[in-house]
Image (cartoon, rainbow, N blue to C red):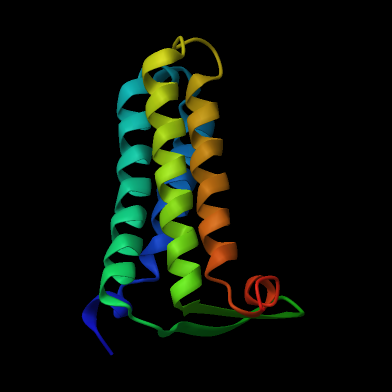
Length: 147
């Protein structure tokens, strides 16, 4: 297995982890975090950029395979999480990543930094992280595009 394929789990979890950490900080230190609008937006843009670059590298190297296969037992629920990388999934995740970067960069430069700006960027990071997770999730997504 290639080293890039080993770290492909960072594609969905980079924006998700940064966004959830910033959300926790926003809940804890609301006033301070609302003043730090530029560092918050730059960190989320960097995390989406990392995901997009990893997707682009996977497209260029034409790597496919299973990245992770986790069985989680949370309370009484059994949860299975498997991330799969194939050609169509990484092409779509690269497109989604580029779209996310355009949305985030235009929001950074065109929006006023008023109330709700930091929350907006955090929810953008969470939503794009969940989109990456859905794209690489395997069976539910891949069954939609079978020809």
